[in-house]
Image 1 (cartoon, rainbow, N blue to C red):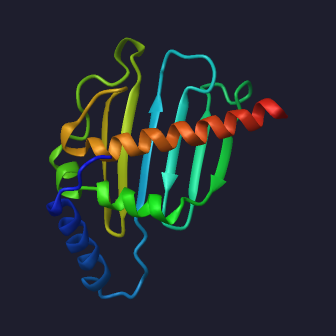
Image 2: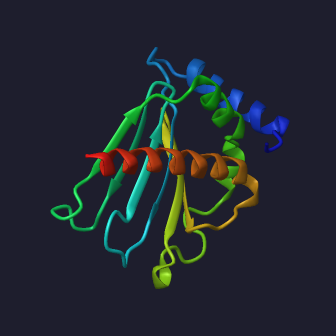
Length: 162
């Protein structure tokens, strides 16, 4: 299990507090955490995305040719314990410290991967080479990869059963 650094939890609490109490409006705050992968020179379901909020989860697999590979979607709800772990692994300061694009994602069809966090007044997305390690946000990347693998297996096992 990854270690949780205190500043990551405190920075998340500070940011969520600013979002909750710093707005003049009383709109509820929705935090969305997304992760996915893509391969440009690929036949099949080459684009995979997982979008998670506290209330919902959507895993989508699509292909470059939607007539041959139509979007496949699996909706659900993340276990509350998993959501709490996701929040604990989310270090917004570390995420913000990365450039929007790192390396050469999907060069020579090596694939691209991304992590994205949407909040009330903006978002931060980091796109990097598929399978790379980004030490400052690796616990979040690892958890999102594990979740993508889980929901991908469930989606494709359902499709195989059809």
